[in-house]
Image (cartoon, rainbow over all chains, first blue to last red; front, top):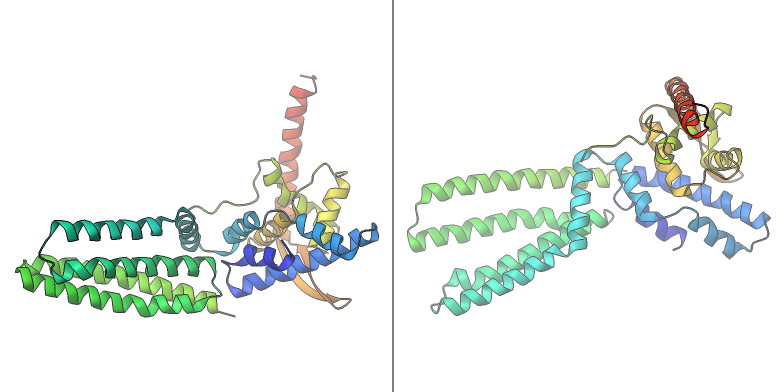
Length: 206
Length: 114
């Protein structure tokens, strides 16, 4: 691991200002350490490699820096997203969605539109949703993923509401109960979008 | 997830690093490398730690008002110097007393004088 990689890992979840401070401190530290090792007789490459090794585990340092600079909510989210990404839980969701899709296809001979297309659409939105969350948590510098999330959320919400209306009309379901569900869904998504937006703004701040 | 302070009265190595940093700063403003070298030298390399853990501890101390920092350009290199505050000094005094109390207690058991 070279210094740049170490720093990337250690600061990847920090806001730019905090990351810059860590970069500054660690870089100066390593330069001093390299000079010290060179005075002991090492060549430049050996000295630099040892200086970076002496920093220790970058992930361990990343967690410590996160506990200094992230709010409790951010820390919870980063930890959850890191565990989620590591567990490949979102891949499990994808496989489960495919499985459900094929079961539905086999069990229901009359291929209803929303059943046939609903599952793959659900699968795609889930994969994209969790994939972008993972990228955003792991690489705040990749703001295009954060932007994509913000654009995707209202589109998926509108799509969900539209297909649900179709479903209600088709089967004559009690609309009042479903409207309550929609209201809860809209509020929950709005809160999520607001949080994502605030976090994105914070990450983008100089 | 609760935010765990990196300094505490527990004198395990993790808990004592911030106290050792504060002690190293009693001799005047210093940068991270100098602080790490000072701790190792004064402990005769007994207290060794991964240097990447020094800065989270320093930044926590700064966040909590125990130290302040300022950057200086030194031979073309930007260095951040850390300085002990009154709050940090008071915390150090308290930690020192706790350590002496604990040290006497452990010595009383392991030193065979009790």
